[in-house]
Length: 295
Length: 264
Ligand SMILES: Nc1ncnc2c1ncn2[C@@H]1O[C@H](COP(=O)(O)OP(=O)(O)O)[C@@H](O)[C@H]1O
Ligand SMILES: [Mg+2]
Image (cartoon, rainbow over all chains, first blue to last red):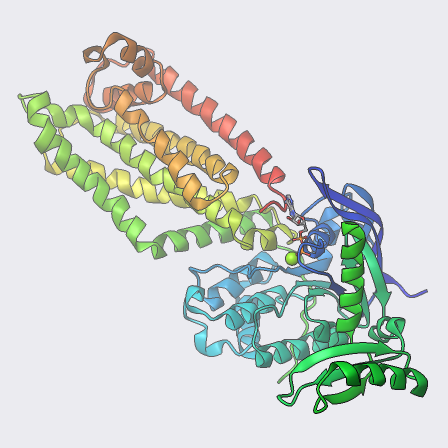
């Protein structure tokens, strides 16, 4: 068995009477990217906070880099780096000052701090803005600075809480590139996201949490094949999606579906067939839970 | 895009260095907050002039009021200056940056120490301004060098005490604006003391409050040291009150900081 960077067994956490995590098991092998998906309020940030020692678990065993997050807090802190959901930067300092401060706090000498800061500013394309106060930065620049700060020293495990939320497509792809580079260096990355495409592109394994439980986990393909078959998509003449139907993919089944659809939709409707996407899995998993909790 | 060179993690920074970094950060933030800084310097000047020239004549037609009022203005300005610590601390606690510090292998409570030291620096400056302006408008203290040192010691103890108290208030209040309004309430204390008028000119029930609150002994001690009025046992009361509030605030800060874990 390969070594685990994150090992969570039977984790429970509630705030007051509100149970947020109700028996979570997750294991992440060293050097892999793990994506945690879930609707808003599912407890993704809470889980990251527990893994990064900010919040204590109520029950269960939680190990990061082989250390217990409760009894070996300091060892865990030496092994992790966190980029939280909201940019953790000093608005009234420049990006250069922000980086140098974290360098010094990480035990680098003044000279080392300078070199490392310049290196990271260049890498994250912030050199031109290095001497401007962070409060004047755009959302994308703040995110980049936030990530740069997390990478001042390489710790074996990196947590990213919704790293690309609110970023434009170009910044998002640049960030993906960086995440893959870090993975190539052997860093274990645990990220949460609301974008299924992101999980699909980056993650070796994915877990979906909802209602306090892991409702599905595996590789992107495992999850997709859970749905099985094919999806028929219907578009109108303006290329807008007007409906989807699942089928097993056999001629028989597709013909039956099409017979039905031909009666319901205008004749110029265009039909295409594709493999199920993570979106379909996600919608299925989270809506099923929703129905259960409503009934 | 070039590759980021990984940098093996070195030992984390020592306790002393951590404090030094956070103190540097807070002082830098104080210097950048120009409005607050100008206010911290202007307020002593305005109050000094206001109390000497506007109220002074009515309170003491002999023109001696300036000697009476200097300690009060020093404390008023120090109270005002340390109150902004509550806002600074609350700001840090509600911003994601505290999570970053907490997940680093450092003593993260030093964030607060940084704000306290910066407040000490700001308020020492304000105190110097008060004393400077006081001399210009006719303040004639009788203190010798040792009495001056003792008075400055009491002033610094007072600033330190109230800064830690405001830091605790900043930790427990949910937002910078809440911190600011809680802090405001405390700023009335100097008016209900012997800072501006002797307490025996107040109604009886108010004298009870004024004579038994911490500001009065501090004022009486500073006034006694600087201008030679009788101190009696007020110095011990001043030191006792300050030590008590300081210790309580430190413990309160420590507990509040631990409890605040992950709550935002
Ligand atoms: N400190 C806290 N106190 C009380 N409730 C909290 C706290 N932190 C999170 N919650 C609640 O826990 C639930 C999960 O929140 P969160 O982990 O932020 O979800 P996500 O990141 O998946 O959107 C939410 O209902 C939230 O209101
Ligand atoms: Mg979240």
